[in-house]
Image (cartoon, rainbow over all chains, first blue to last red; front, side):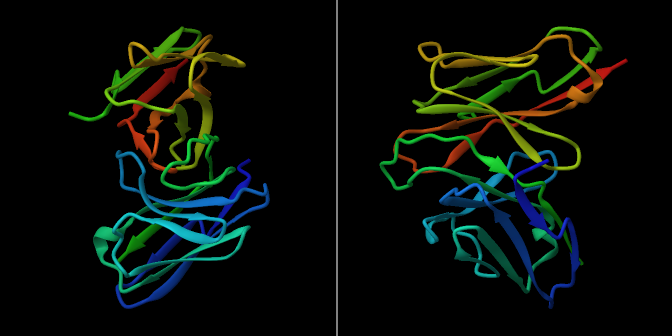
Length: 119
Length: 110
């Protein structure tokens, strides 16, 4: 069982819909991540939150909007998505402070992902 | 050329066999991760290495920093080991960004 919980497990949405993906961890981790993974490809980093502040945005289109309401929760709000946005969306968390010169390394804990289909 | 290369891309083994998956990287790193992804999608972090060797159950991971190479070994393989194994490296000064290999798809048959 994963200690990072993602909901929903599956989501089908139309291009005009607004939906949200949710991620929760109670390990006291202060860094949380969103990754996007297409079939048979490695995960691609989208966003990183460190101490509830957005620290990395990998030039993700604005139709994806992350939110970190508190240290345990991470949301990804979706609006006006395209069919090519269909993918597995993975949340992860880790301990430790972040920053451009951070050298602290800690394991990533991943959730089971939300499989998103945009029709 | 990818900064992180894995071999083989696909691997089929019989139950009980000793398995080795290799990862070579071309950049300086502060840590290397081995991850396991089952068909359902969830990813499990198996090891994080910066030097030497780690063992957990039937899994062993080694890293040679000078040669920029890491191996993941599975002893007495079992069908439940069937998954995609991903090598990922963390480069110094890149905060929390990992550079991923393309994965090795392992199928263990009875």
